[in-house]
Image (tube, rainbow, N blue to C red; front, side, top):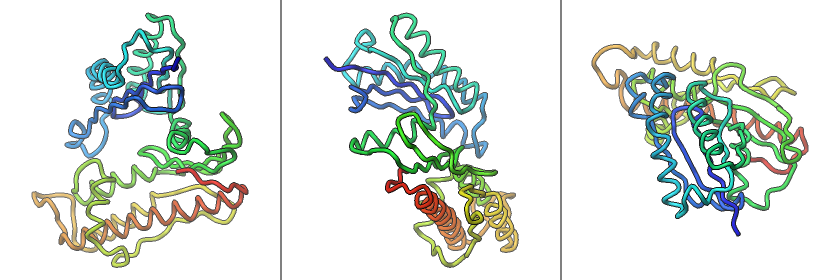
Length: 277
């Protein structure tokens, strides 16, 4: 008989639930986005995020069960994100999972969602073996790990300031593109020339695998100001659209270049033959 796990994730601004069969096969995955809620602010408002999680958590879990073709009575265990993340958001999902586990008398496992990022690769690559170097590049984290065994990780490097995703959001806000910044900058970058505006590559000194994107963000700010742009006023795009596209392409190229260089250097230094993204 298949073992079914209900996964619950509310670490930031998306309410998500999934049903996993035997730890490998995804039976369902449902995500309720909060993009439109936070878009007017150009970033996530923690209090608004936690309130929306309260509203969405039960409908999302019900939808995940329905799509998986199972009932709550058939779930054998629950896994809920326990950190890191926004404390108010985390409490909603974790407490909801605790209540379900208590009512059903089934196990509950608290999951570090950064570990979840690393293990997600096993869903598509079931033959993936240890050791491997893992790059976690999400909205709030840019970390490099050496995974030597199941549950055994060594932090190789991390961001010293802004995460890559946060830098994307800040630059998108500067250019008045909207929120979330990542998809919007990528869309604009497709129309631009990545070599038209050359931004600095904040590569760490030899032997270090840390990241830093605050200087790159500042370089974009200074360039926009120098080009006569401003985030104030009624114009949706204060700069020429062609220049905005080139800025997005150059910025994205710089971020990705740094992520690739540092990740490959860390993988070589750790003698790891596999790099997991």
